[in-house]
Image (cartoon, rainbow, N blue to C red; front, side, top):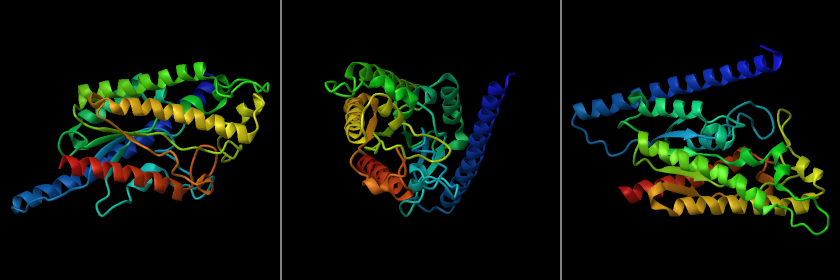
Length: 298
């Protein structure tokens, strides 16, 4: 095994170990919830409510182990914030990992992992999760590949190449559709909640460990930051339109949490990630959408 492959394998094993530990902790939490529920039933006490129990799959918006751009090293992402909201915060089995594209999240190995945890009754109170949370699409576009979707600024081009970008959106849409299919087979009826990110500032800001993800491609294609911001806005607006279309099909049981236009400029830590307070605002949008859905069902 050469050095690059060795490093990749070592990183993969560390991710697997981290996910295994999350599953272990989650199962211990479910065991406590189930025990409390059983005790209440034994005493003849009606259980009026319990926390939502959910599965999360996603990218760095669900798994961001930094505070802004650095220390302390602690999860500040949407899932971390959502676990703190409300009088009875949700219990979430989080399979997300930063840096993953939608095509990674719905790859063979990741689908196998989702199927395994969905079929394991020790992960759920009533045989399956109350909802699935999904964060995907940003890493399919942002990064060194972003230049693929840009026209060179010759004074006449609009910036975002709509034809090439639409093909990238098609790949992302296929991943969402595959998730719906997996859910229908393994956990029928479970609603899926996704989001559409927000409009970042492509100014090259990044933590020491990763990035930048947008400005290098804009520089390469001769676009200044102000024009680049409009290009990124157009790309994310098209991404949201695709998700709106998926959510409009009732058969998909997909709910779009509309997160665009939520964050102020000062709430961005870097080109892709909010500060902890920004993540908290996004998490509140998820909490509101979940509450509206389950109150309506109740």
